[in-house]
View (cartoon, rainbow, N blue to C red):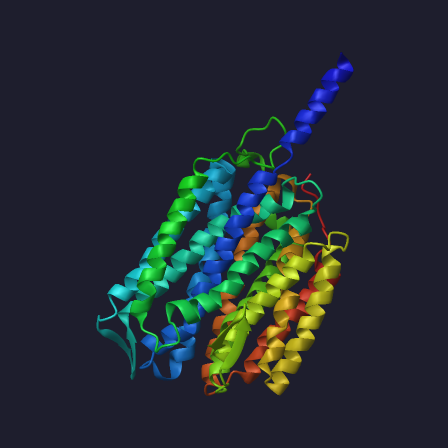
Length: 441
């Protein structure tokens, strides 16, 4: 009788710890996160042409401020979202994030309706009011995606799916994310703007459709059950945060991990978004591509962005099979190669070398995230929120690069030293910084 009860308890425990269904939901949400993140970045070049033609010598600074505003949403919402997870649960937090996402897309779309408002003068430079409306929407978009990722990433790291590890699950979700990021440059360059002279009015219909899609996803998610994989068996859905007495910053590997996320995201976004602005200064020829027996012509800068994000997809698909290789080894290898590629790309101004960095960046997020939250125990949600602060690197570093390009008279070549420094820090984190210095137990 006792053996039968023990067997039933074991079977029920195993069943409860199989989160395959919720895992697939998170993978789908990662696709949305990746797609909208890069769509927003790829608006830099066309909106620079459509709205910033009278911005003079600050046009690169303003164009890259679109990405700055977006990624500043992450530090704003990181801790707030982690508190929502602890007090309201995963499902409620996700739905809140999706609602915020609909509102943010609506604000961006609204900028197209106010394109005829008078411009604001900054000395001899003029900037349309519609640009600032779009910036508000971009910031809101970053806030919304920060909420989603505060739930998604720790969920992926600790949920139980047979035959997977934390790095493997993050890599699988990263592959879905990369499918979205690969499609995004083509979506912006060929579908929204269609190869014609960009006008802000062209964003209205696509963004309105995306609002509807996200609203439908929120409605469907509201009807599904989403367990908390971080709660012990029999625990409630929420965590009593008052019992967590340590500061999350007392974990040295997490603190250094926040810096690692900062420089990683900064480098990833700098290449993925600013390579377009750099390529436009080189007057590269359009390239004819054959895809599925169909021939079409793409602008070189759009193809570079597509291949960069596409190489991240390839890398993440490959990375999902690297479960037996420690995360720190993966990070050391990829960061070292990325450093070399960036240096050669900068000195020779061969931007196709920078495209190859995407393959190296592909598995860094999963490796850094898993290393940074290792052994945090009940502080995992707080650690995830702290890591979202690091995502602000995607705001600050590409923007500094844009400012540097303006300061250098519009030249981007030597601005890539910023990315070189980022890759060097990641090498350090993979060698030393990842080692846990304190247990949360």
